[in-house]
Structures are given as structure tokens and as C-alpha cells.
Image (cartoon, rainbow, N blue to C red; front, side):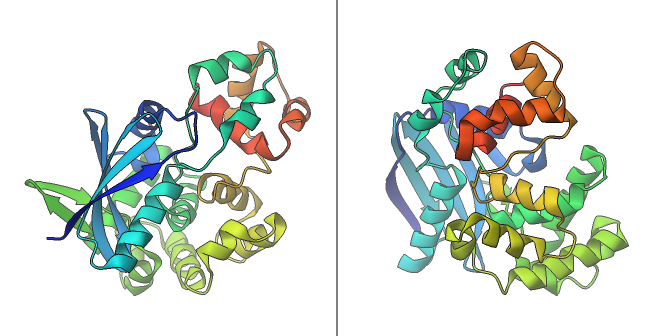
Amino acid sequence: MTNSEHHLTAAAPFDFGMSLRFVGGFSPTAGEQRIGDGRLVKALRVGGETVLAEVSASGTAVQVRLSGAQGQAAVAAALDRIRFFLSLDDELEEFYALADDEFRPVVERLYGYHQVKFSSPWENVAWAILSQRTPRAVAVKAKAALIEATGNLFEADGILHPAFPDAEQVVALDNLAEVIGNVRKAGYLQGAARRWLDLSETELRQAPYEEAKEQLLSLPGIGPWSAMFVMIRGLGRTDEMPTEKEFLRAAARVYGRALDEKALVQLSDRYGPWRGYWAHYLRADS
């Protein structure tokens, strides 16, 4: 097995403990990583292979131990995936400087928390489809079945670490409807996987916001809300924010009053391109 040690740097302020706390409570990825002793151990798909990353940090210095990455290209891709997944490059001071009086205590509680995204935007797309109009527990079960069906397991020290399948693997599944227990969603998921293979994640990260969003809207099963969801939680692009009930409740708790969608949008205006981060902090603090 190929093992290698690497060092990354996070933009200050950075609190890896906050990242671990969020991951530990994020139900869409429950059971897909191990957390303990200040470390995150997670299997990832990189270049058609499953690799294992063990991540720890001291201040802004992030240590990564990779297992199974074959060659420099695979190592570089894995490190890029980890850096993006943990949002290590997010410059939060600009965001924090915008905090209003009611939001400032949230900043103090989450100070140094960089948004932990889905491990890839493709995984976020798949979760958006699986979770549409579906109880959370049912969607989590379907996602776990999808991982099991593709067999992406990395064994280390007698422990099996699952990795979410890449789009190529989903396209190749002949029994997808049986696996996830839903014919309609299987059609959307497989169609989205085929279309995803024609897209460039790099371009989605860098293209003008509306252009990138239009690319997501071209995926079967992805509507305006899901596209915005993937933009924030899969691509780290926070120009927009969700306004559904759970965010209204989170904002009402912080701001101490009932809020409708119009009031929520008005509150978010001061945060400009950080409004999606603001919304994420509201939910992460709940």
C-alpha cells in the first residue's frame, strides 16, 4: 500500500475542532467517516480509485496522511479534494466583519469554522436527488445502499471505510432502482450521472455564478432549489441562500423574532456574496 504524508495550510482563523463537530452531526454523511482524537479519517474517490485520508490539524497547519493514492497526479487530486472539502482557503475575516449585533454571538461560537462541504459536488447532486420530498432517514438509507452496491471500501487496520461512488459507477449500475428503492429517482440519478460526466468541476468552481448554476440546472432531477443547494454545499459558492422553513426557524432563533421569507432576505442583504455562508452558520449553530 502506498502511504504518504502531506502538509496543507488553512486560511486563518481556522478551528479544525469545529469542522469535526459539524461532520459528526451531519446526517447525510453519517457512518461515512471516523472521527476521534482530533482526527478525521475518510475514504474518497479520486481518479477512479478509492483512497484513504487521515486529517488532523494544529492551528492553521493541516496534516494529511494518504493511503492508496498511486502516483503524483492521484496525490495532487486527493489533496485538492481534501482542501476543497474542508474549505481551507475560505477567508472568513471579511465575512465576520459584516456580522450584525444579533449574529455576532453565532460568529463567536463558530469562530474559525470553515464550511465543510460534501466530499464532492457530485455527491451533493446525488444527495439532492435522493432527499427530495423524502424523509431524511429514508434518504440516508438509500445513500448507504448506493455506497454498498458499488463496493468502494478501503480497509485499514481491520476497519472498512466507505467512499461515495463517482458518477461513472452510478452510470454502470444496472439495478439502481432496486438498490435505492425508487424507480423515478433512479432515473434522475442515472441521468444526472451521465450528464455530470460531460461537465468540468473546475469550471463549475470558477465560471460566473449564473453560468455554473445553469449547468447544474441541466442535470435531470435538479431544480432551482437543488441547484442553489449544490452551489453552496458542493461548490462553496455562497451568493444565494435557501429560504425554506428550517432556515427561517434558525434565523428566528438567532434574531429573536418570527421571520418570513422577505424579512430573511432583507437580513441577508448586508452579507452580499457571503449570504450563503451566513445561512450555513445559522444552521450549523442550531
